[in-house]
Each structure stands twice: as C-alpha cells, then as structure tokens.
Length: 280
Image (cartoon, rainbow, N blue to C red; front, side, top):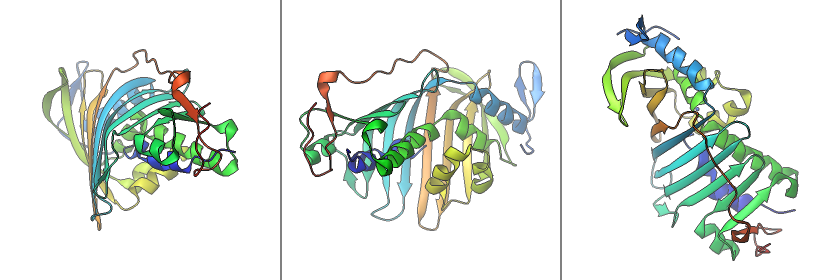
C-alpha cells in the first residue's frame, strides 16, 4: 500500500482558510428593507445553493517564529455533479520557510493529484505530479486522505457564511464596489464555538481543530444585490498569535472544468515515503 504522509503534510494548507441575532442599519434588498442580521441569514441560504465558484484567498498567521506565515492562492471549486477542486498556492510560508514554487493540488472525488517541487525532490520523483487514490491506500492512509478531502470541503462558501450567520452584533456599514460589483458592507463578530455548531459534523471537527484557540472571530462581508458574498474577511486573536483571512468570490454557479493532469505527467506515490516513485 502506498503511503501519503508527505503529500498530506505538503498540502495540509488546503483549508487553512478554510468554516441570527439582531442588527441595525437596514439594507435594501429587492425593494424590501431588511435588518443586517436578516440579510446575513438570507446570504447563508443563498450560499447553500451555490454549486461552483472561484475564490482568491490570503491567510496570515502570527504566533512566534515557528507558527507565523502566509498562504496565498486561488481555488476553483465544484460540489456537483461530483466534488472537484483545483487549488493553486502561489505563496506558502511558515516558520520563515517558503515552499519553493508553491503548490498545486487537484482533487477529483477520491483521487488527489499533488504538484509540489519540494515533495518531488524529497521522493526522487521523475514526473511533476504525484497521484493517490483511496483504493490504493491502507486504512490509516485512507483516513488521512479523507481528512484532506474534508479540508477542501471546509473551504466552501456555505460553511463560512453559516458561521457568520450566528453573529449577534452584525451591522450594515455602507456600500462599496468589489470587483466591479456594487455591494453592501456588513461587519460584526461571532463566537467560534457557537458558529461551529452550525456546520455539518464532517466539517465541524476539522474546523474546530483549525480555530480552537480563537474565542471570538471578527468578520466583514460584502454582499451583492442577490445577497451573495463577494468578499469576506475573518480575523481573530489568541494568546499565542492572530489569524487574518481575506477571500474574494467570483463565478457563482458558472461551469467549472477541472480535469486530472495529463497521464504522462503523473507518477504514483511510492510504497513507502522513503522509496522512489515508480513513474507509472
């Protein structure tokens, strides 16, 4: 059985971004004035219906020399008719160390393709892409692969807005143009533990692991006339550091074409992480 430990470690940042009450300052939506909290609640419902989108994201983490870093990249995402994601991380830096060339990950249901120069060099790979399928893995590695898929699912728009919808202090703070689209800007906070309860169980545990040290999260959301988020920022502080993320969303429900890399560019992971790939 092939081992995927290094591949999982190299791409564990896939979802480092990866997530009713009363408000004031009514907003105009379809000719009807809605309180800010109602708009956010409707936004969560709208996000549930989105099956594809593109997100440009940057995450900055501070927490001492070994825990500080930045991840920046773009992901194209599709939940139906099958789960598929194409993630390009242009910047991956943690503990003062860069991942040269960044990382490129493609997830197609139960199969993951990884292109990370540093990983390829460590394994002596002769082809740019490494592939792992659940059917090739033992029980422990299947668990790790499923956790990675869960990280990608966490990156979804709906989960983030569901968490925001638990805010008790959200307010509309003005109108702004985001990516050429007129939006209303909302701002507030939400308690992380309460927000996590809104997520599906398969997303909740992973999100709790990522956000465990943050009690309250600050957010800003810019929603368009259809009440879909065009931009979301999240920020939080803990005893040992801080977390800041910015996500720009486009291409809602537009067709997404995500394919496996060319077969002649793909090699299999080795039987053990210390072995060279077969190149088949």
